[in-house]
Length: 224
Image (cartoon, rainbow, N blue to C red; front, top):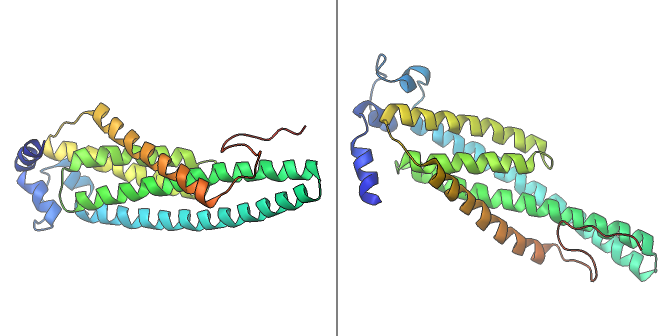
């Protein structure tokens, strides 16, 4: 696989490689990418990493707020159980279950974006561009969808970042003539999301305790 990457990198047009390292003067019209986007590819990837770091900070803030909310609901649920107020206890237990569900979405998204940033930093060092950008773009689209109903503002930011990466993928293909397997890229993206989800489940169990007899994440409590 490394040999294939080396071959693809060697076959890249000189103007594209120079554009990456910012050593060239912008050519007149040698590639569509250079004509439409005078900002070097490396700079745009750096900008994308910066924007994703901002999104991660927003997710971390949301994580802390939702954790505080869960602690408050949990405490109220315990108090209601102690006073034998079953109806109120059930209401807060349901609230806690919903908060845990939201927390898992937020934590999964944050972990997935951490992997995205790591991959983009590899691309910034001129790794296998197309092979890294495609799964990264797919992960961001998925995270955007997950957060749409949880943190709409963050979802909108990710939508803009996703458009930028989709544009970069097209440019890389046009400038280098590279081809890649969309199915393999999709599997790579699914792996990132699956691993993030598994770690998030563990973090939710550790940081968002459940009351005895209350439902697991995503389930509701039905009044008796």
